[in-house]
Length: 429
Image 1 (tube, rainbow, N blue to C red):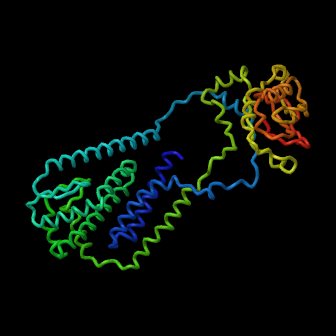
Image 2: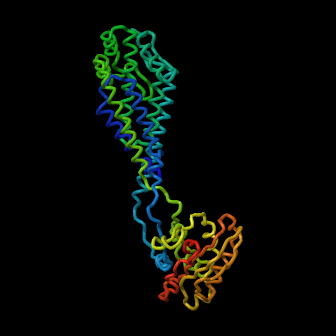
Image 3: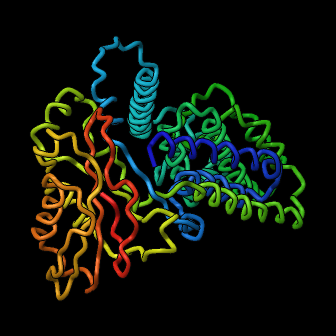
């Protein structure tokens, strides 16, 4: 999973989770549950993309797959050497803008932390705020004991931790406008919770509301602190303070979050899993250097690709080998060289060799379908040179190797080789 794909999923989940909150939970007075929901929404949005349900990702194919790649097609691609002037890369521009945004908001967070540190050391008259365990309250303020109760609630309930959590999420998702709504919502919830605690301490909601109104002007709060006199929240704080408590039946709304979470996990898991048995031929060819590739074809051993399963039409006639033969295939494909005689004669086709393995040794090595001009001998030499047969079971095996010339119209000999009876068919090279 690429970072871009991960980031896309995170932003999508943040949007849907917030939409659910705004639609069903925002007006409820279960402030603690709302706080838990918002923090959980942020945390799960980061984690869900990494969750995989194995029963979804491990669906097995109903039929084995057989793939072939022609060397002439590869060489035709390799000989294209025309140079094109690259245009403006918009993708790179987007990446640069995104990284610049991350750097900006990270620096902004550091600056705000530094500012809070200065505010704590040099508290101004009339200040009333808290940050983690630090509480700054001007003792000359009226009802300072009530304000102290309010800020104490912020400290005991670790509200600063929530704020910093969403600040960090905001750094990597700064392009998503919803993250700023999360920041606002979580600060609202913090104030509602602290107001509940302080109003209970005061003993009179109306008198406490008057305290909020009388001290809510002329204050410039910091984004990271919990401020008693933050004027932008005054109306909503007073409204929620006097609002009738939500009915117990409203708790049912929070239960809807569980199936929503399940849907997101299924969505995240419904991705194509990498099939380790299918090797990508393109990854083996350095097409970014086509000229060098064509030149090296003359001097280097041919690199043969292979499928990991037998063709579907041969399933009924032969037994596919499920053991790990990757090392063998890799060794043989590198060891076999296209004989010079065969190249000069324009010979191309398929060679089939049969052999037996007993206690890690090769026995009864025989060329079953002859191609000639040294091709069959190359296959047999490669098999005899391999030293890893101790890892495979005893038995009789047959392997077919194809020899192809680039840009050649010559007839392909032995094009239709039948499976060897009584032998387990290895993948064709």
